[in-house]
Length: 395
Image (cartoon, rainbow, N blue to C red):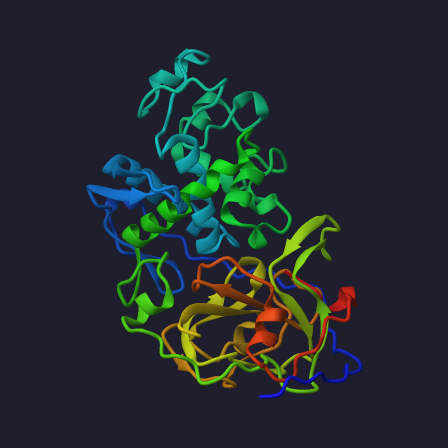
């Protein structure tokens, strides 16, 4: 296929301010080991007696049932808060693993009374307490509150209904947290003197999600698309541009930018392609759908996993309205198939497609889609214009 540029189309149709995010169903007490819905088709299953896990740095250790019960409390709490989703829960698990290895720690040296509450041992980091090592002196809560694991999880997630709102900031209070690496997002809440340590626990968090949750097909929330379908995704026949020729204009690029909603510095994990509402979104390659749901700042989100040049890669498509998602998880799609419609849900200021490329699969770290599309001869590729009109930008 030949690479070609297309002319910038005139007048992008606009919608109003961003819509509210769709909530996630509240689930039951994990101690009951009930099989309860978390988000979409993901279920919280029984808590195993132990789980052996390995960090990104190669350290292997075993979590006991009490630690895994604390993880289930974090999952349960996040599932009941609008806008958190699976990725927010993953970030909270990364934070609690790093801070306490999922232990509810007292601190009798600073707060003798903390030892009177149920705990998993004694910590000694300044005046920090609990799963997330929160400090009463920093305003996170009282000793009694912070010795409650559910309270700590609610405080970490934050948001307008969080017990610590508006300060200190929880995850939902961090502008653009959805586009941050999980380790960076955890650090943004914890504000640790050792910010690089969080990323080491990303694979452990995924292992916990796999062990404690399952979609209706029996695979955990940390799994990739090939694991969901139980088969290898065939090599794609081609790679195509995700919007029809002549129907769009690029409005934002991958990388550092000023967030169009908050005005603060942020990192943009994809490219934004402004187009009239309802414009067909096309699968960039043959593959299997791994996500088709509302997901925090992405609004209506579809993720498709492919095999390209023998490697697993996922493409993500954001900001569709609820009725603009035309596929479900587990569907097989072909390159150029109409999978959704352009919208402006989630953290968006107007109709556009937010498009990402994630080497490694559904949970991979996003790269710049533009050279990837160019390298794979995608049609209708527009060289970045550098224009970033606020009316069609978003997460």
